[in-house]
Amino acid sequence: MNLRYQHEFPPKNIDLGALAALIGRANASLSRYDGLLESLINPEVMLSPLVMKEAELSSRIEGTIATANEVYQQQAGEKFEPGKDADIQEILNYRSTLRNAERSLGEDPLSLHLLRQMHENLMQGVRGQDKNPGQFRETQNWIGPRGCTIKEATYVPPSPLVLKELLEQFVNFANSLDESLDPIVQAALIHAQFELIHPFDDGNGRIGRMLIPLFLVRRGSIVSPSLYISGYLEANRDEYYQCLENISGKGDWFGWIKFFLNAVVKQSENNLNLVRKVIELYDRKKREISELLHTDQAIYIVDMLFDTPVFRANKLHQRLNIQRQRAAQYIRSLKDAGIIVEIRPSSGRTPALLSFEDLWKITDRQ
Image 1 (tube, rainbow, N blue to C red):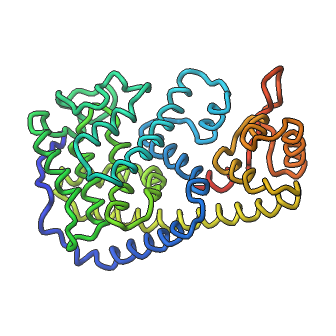
Image 2 (spheres, one colour):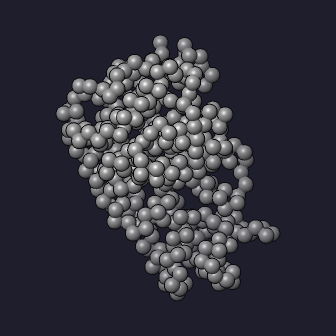
Image 3 (cartoon, helix red, strand yellow):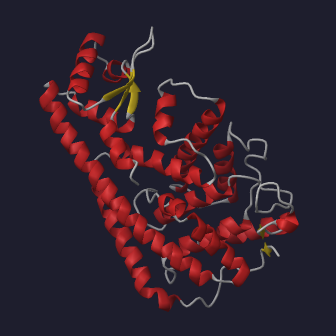
């Protein structure tokens, strides 16, 4: 027997008192991580590889198998088979959708228009682009093994006839600033409800995961949408889906909130350690490259390595606006020192493909 949408929202009478200690831990962990983010001098550069990693991991939950490294390779001109190209585009769409939504929510509250806009951006030019990008579904959908019928489904979302009412209710709750409800708990409710409504024909999981950090930024719990919780959800995928199913199957919001709070604790701590390692690597490479190249442009080279960790050899002279010969000297010195690694030699007019491997050694452990 499949599960159907049948719960009220927002839920009432959840025993949050039994979760008080865990709520405190989640807020403390998130606060420590946010404090580190606020101390970053150039967050766009420092967090760039982590934003891409989050896009990779959130897309992986939906079956995408491309990596952040391959995304950078493609952007540097590497060719992949069509299936891989499609996966890479999904990751790039995720990143751009998150960034655009962050800008929009900096000025306006969450709206049905913004949700449609996010979905249209996410599905642009990728698999699923035939599934009404930017439009809420008008037919009944269901979740289950590929090719299953509605009777074989594990979960059946609400009818499209009640979708508009549920979405308006959802948006009103997401925009409410109820000081009596902890922001992380509210984020948990928002994510679960969005997934259970399942308002689009495709892409619901990724949109729902984006809403978590976006909401926490809006509530002032974190300075930028950089929680990157998909790492935990991907590693605990079965429990993640089971907890969501238990809401409709058993009305178990308590179990879901507990899972979500543990996810925030664990991922905040992981992210804190990850960003610390990135900062340490950045400072170390800034000193090394300065001493190695004896140039006041060392800082710009370091910035390039962090926001474009896979690049063509000609990228440096374009980025720094210096002579090709000088850039080639820098590249040779960086390769000889082991700071960058050649992963594809030059061929004809195509420059060598280079990689800042030390950064991957950190981010691939997320």
